[in-house]
Amino acid sequence: MAASMGGADGSGRDSDARIEHVEARARELYNRLPTYQTTIRTTRRPFFVEFAGTPKAGKTAGMEALDRLLRRNDFRVRMISERAGASPLRAKHHVFFNISTVSDTISRILESLDRNDHFVFIDRGLFDSLCWLDWFLTAGRITADEYAAVSGFLRIPRLRRLTDLVFVLTADPETALEREVSGQLTRRPGGIMNPTTLSQLNRSVSNVRRLYANEFLFVDIDTTHADLSGTLERMAHRTLDGLEQFLDFVFVVRRQDVGYLPDAGFVADPQIIDQFLAAIRSSGRFVDRRIAEADHELVQPVPIAYFWHEGRLFLLRRSELDVQNPMHEKWTVWAGGHIRREDEGEDLVQAALERETEEELYLRNVPDPRVVGLVLDNSRPRSRLHVGVVHRVDLDQSVARAMERRRFTEPNGRSLTLELVGPDQIGRYADEMEAWSRAILKSHLRWPC
Image 1: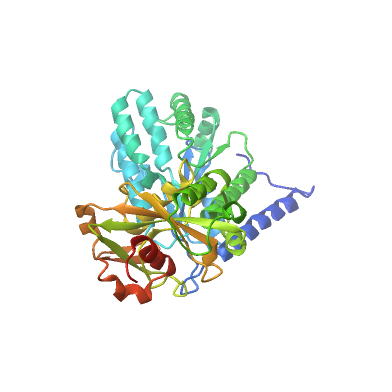
Image 2: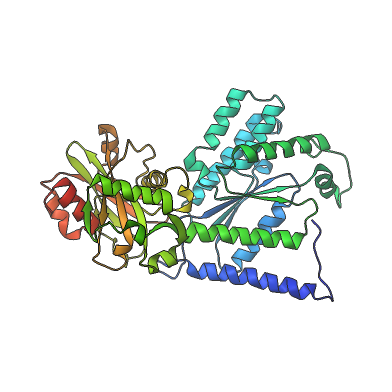
């Protein structure tokens, strides 16, 4: 990547204008982050960006430039460096080396969930490890069964979802080798940095990129003949695009498409429920959350579930970061939340419910959630914008025991405290319960509240 230096023809001024545009966009996005209790701007979790691809394709330059841009515009960025250099293992061509380094990287990714960063940049993460596994398989160093087992682990949804964006930077072997020896005192090839291995690695990158096209969000950049400043500018915009959709895009349907819904209460009519779910599948879309919260002609479906065990259900007391949040210190009978971009797929409602219950209650294998109704509230203008899609989840004894009287803390500091109660106990919580919960209890479960 040769840098464009600008000159008397005005290209330097044009470059300055483009840089100012990127910085202005970064500042605008930062100022849209919510503040909770203090002036610290936060997100529900960091936005994870992986840098992968051919050695010497520009990963380090890209990471450092984006890190500098974002930090100087007040974002908090954590860098997870390539773990190969820190590995005590010497057999770099053995699959154990790959397993060791990716395990170290995963550990650091998980640690990042408990930090208050906006971005986490990963130098060679899950996708890159999959590429090396493909190379090991091609080279006959692992079996197909071993490849399937390790790659399956790296692609389990709760791990894979912690890679929000992957920059796949590639270069042809000749260019990569030229960059490797530039300014050095030797041109002897290395164990990896040689034409044969680099060609094989590029084929593995292309193969894995094709295999998992629907599992990661990729940005492909061939840096063989690329201009450095243009490449970095493109990476900056794609990173900010990703953050914007991660933060602010929620799923909506048009109110005119669901005009059969009542203004408030619990809806148990199967025909109306099916109509609403059909509208989600056929006419819903993602929009900027600021637009969704201001436009009363848009309705936000919110998948939620209550958790039932032997005639009792779990109550959840919510502690929010924002003490002005109407849900703060309220009791609810449900867990759930908005449908987000990361839930895109065949069944948005199911995917969002699974993600939310995993984030809030650590439950991954939600046992057969059944849609039992819709719930609405018109007591406040903002409440009218949301429709809860209510599911019932029947828990077995072992899961119920593991949840009873537990406090679940999310990485961003929000928490839930659980109580398992029956109809004879529910009255003591009624005064501190929000509207959806009261509607579910009164109209669906027929409990006194």
